Image (cartoon, rainbow, N blue to C red; front, side, top):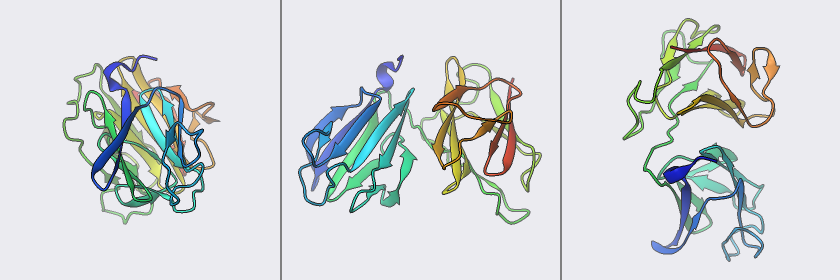
Length: 224
């Protein structure tokens, strides 16, 4: 696994005092009160098995394991979410900062909202500070929307991670790597379709011309 300096780590603090930091080196890292967890937080507000971090390539997802008091990222309750550099995970009174070694922001950059009003921008973009400029990592690529209110629109995949789909229904991420672009399943009971077939496994390498379908929206991946 060629993560190099991008390996993430967790910094656990209570009332502003750093308690421990943990390097994320395994495919799955568990957090909870029980002593067998990888990150043990001995507090009654924390469930025995509270949350799990799953590493998919250079991406790290956190998933709440139906904990009693919930898992929060930057103040918002989550079920499963992609972690980005500098995110703060809150479990009980504990704050866990997620840091990526090279300082790259793995930022959510795009969300398709099929229900947006006609004429409104259906693409919500959040630039990541310090993001790599378009074209700086090889051939550029775009997503072309094929149906719905956003049909005909093109969005450049210039950020490290772009998320697409409908939150709460079906979400996937497209990650820019030196070797190409990779699609990963993030949220939803159904996996995204690629060229009419459901995604097998957690990730798939994208080829120019591939058609992705998410939450009823079809888009084509085109690499220049």
